[in-house]
Length: 409
Image (cartoon, rainbow, N blue to C red):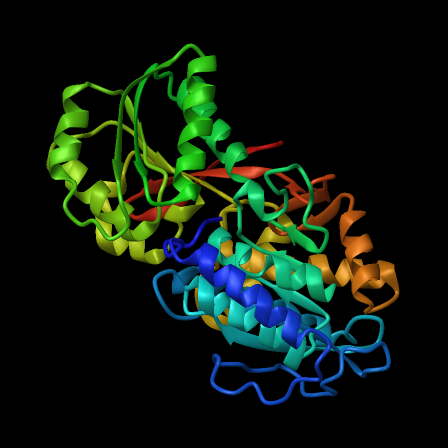
């Protein structure tokens, strides 16, 4: 989904980390030190060679920090999948060892975690990070060490495709990309809600939000609609009433708010307090239980979210997953839980087809993925290593996400 909010230091940190990778690549490593919490679901050999009795999947996730809700959910979903796979004999007869490292929702920590997983833990595959900015801080490490990296929720196009059109060979995703979400939001506003005059209120500090806003605006105008007002905020803002008052004066019929739950919750609350009762809509960055806490359940009525799946979808595969998750954790799974779960099965499928834990073999198998049935949809991988899959639109009703419709790609 999403992109980290702490990207200003990325360029310099990434350059420095690249030098570190060069120094560490090929080393046998050692202790994980204090670079982050780690745990494994099944102890085994620390080598990532083909003769190991385990397959090591590393998780570089936001377990603490600003967007810990995302990373922690992905980890829980992944652990549920790994438990089921191991209980059924593993992958090609080998059990999965799961190694988690906390990147603390920061680019520099994500880089350190990737180095640790690649050179010290010697994992066969890496999952994560959750946010696009943190994924970008790990891409070169994956490519240089020839270790496939699969992000469950990094939706920015440049995670897999560089500005020059080249593809990051060892990087994949199990989520859809931002332009797809922006187009869906615009079509929903036009075709389902019948609105023409819209406003956009986006996080100007986030490439994630800016990309969504651009795709939404282009599609709304293509649909014959008009953007009557555009406004911006930045991460960590808390008072939005002045800007919302200006937006209200333009009489939009609908407001698109791409951003993260921390700010969005406050925006929704303050918008309703100002008497803005038009439909509000966002993308997967809204998806957190904390959104309801911040916004208030009643204030979220008449608001919509694009997401990767719905726990209310009657699809039997989804309902089996919901039951298994609820049995283990005592709660209903959100989209990030589902994506974490799916990412493990996505990797399992590739390793089984590769017949090997060699990084290049797994990479080739991931790239050849066609029509694998997962909880969050049937997934094929395109030439840019993006997941081609459906999206779900949910409506908030008294604080609960309710299934509205599923959109096929």
